[in-house]
Image (cartoon, rainbow, N blue to C red; front, side):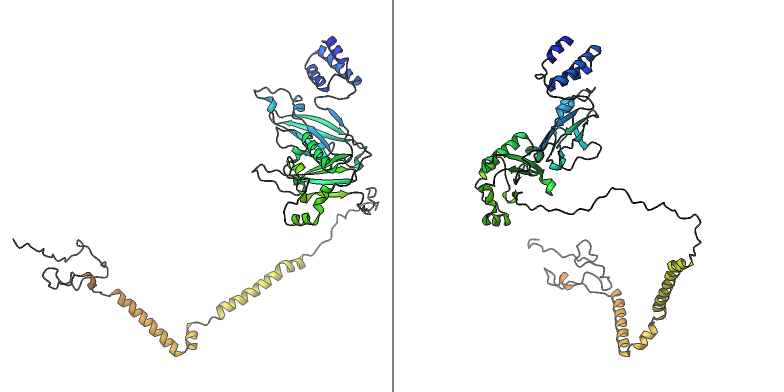
Length: 448
């Protein structure tokens, strides 16, 4: 095994990092012979042109982005799956939910220029951003912690970002486009970003064209779209070039298109068809900036100082012997005065309610006699009507009685006596409820 690996490791340039990683994992699970193999693998890394330090808990990766150019680093789930031990229970380890946590080493969050996004635990994470010139020469160490939510295992790697300076930074002409039908993770894909830069290059025709920054519309105050009709969040893409803006990009600044934008209508852009097949651009939100004409604003910042407080002498704590304090004045202010005010208000209220009542006799004395007579007569009449209503006797309605006999034509006597109580009798009675029902003779035939 050692001889075969020695021949295999002899050509370090052709030996890929992926094969080294697989052999390293295999060597870690072996005994003494495999420890020798691991030693040979580590020695081969010293002679190989690509230097990569691999470890289960700490694997530092070095990347070298340029200042003023978009930086994108994908955290691949497949890369971290080999760091987790095999799960004893049955299950598909390829679909393990893995999430990532990224932070600047020694700090709880990432640098201000670096952003991170991961939609679901089954998708890759992406670190992206645009470093500025003040970050050049300062290595930025990002701690990446992967969490396997099925096995509850973790793996930690370090990403060392070495920001390099470039002579082309910053490009003088910068244009920012708003793409409505894209999310930020879709736009960060190399194929999609390459297609967009190719379309911009066909319209702009520059010699140098770089993607400067990508920002999600949510980071600019946009609203989360509804989960219908495959709506997207939208993304802002800033690109820079070394030549003046083309006439097509300048068309949005015409008065006609500005009027259409103010009326929330789409402007007429001649080169929109070159983007429409894949990218839906909101031309009203395009921003064209010529940094050669931007006047720099210098703000006078105060001197931050050394951060050390001036020497004002020793601290003298108060003495232990405190003076006696008289709380009588505080008692008067907090209890006696409000109680006195409440007592005065209570006396005024009692006097107005109990001592100022007129009474019935005083009211009658102040009322004219004619009004008292009218009032008394109304009361008497009301009382009399109530007494009469209790003892009323109402005769039976004539409309409900047969006045004449249907055969003989004789007058039919009433169906109830005179002393019968009719107040509780319904207006229409049935034949069974009548007490004094008169039988009407039936008409006989002539033969009988």
